[in-house]
Amino acid sequence: MGVNALVKKVLTDVGIKEERFSLQWASAAEAPRFVQLITEFTEEMKELGPIGQAEGFSKEEVQERVQKALDALSSQKVRISFGNASKAVRKDGIWTAEHIGGIINTKMEKSLAILNK
Image (cartoon, rainbow, N blue to C red):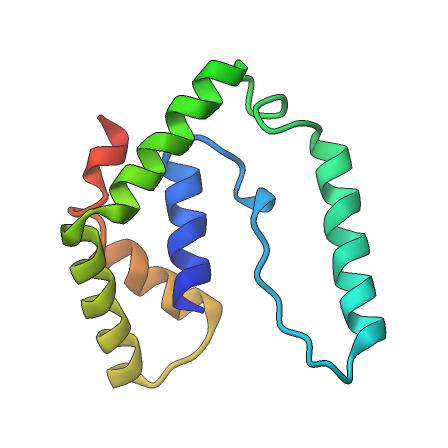
């Protein structure tokens, strides 16, 4: 769940709709669930249109924003902050998406500030 919260925060920070990312779990025994998840996600992406369209960005702007996100996520500072945020989540032992998202947002605010420049 921490990776999910991190990716959604980064996407939001660079101006890309967080709905463009989905991380769901399905076991090999859950073929109907897998099909449902893929079908729903595909429909959502069709509604949003090509990346950048719903956000109002040109192809070049999308490429710049995605590169900015990749550069940030590759930085040692961000990886260390994420490790610390993960430790905080484990320490709290509260596994709701809201709690994890809150910790990710709080603990990683400074290290991800580069995205807002």
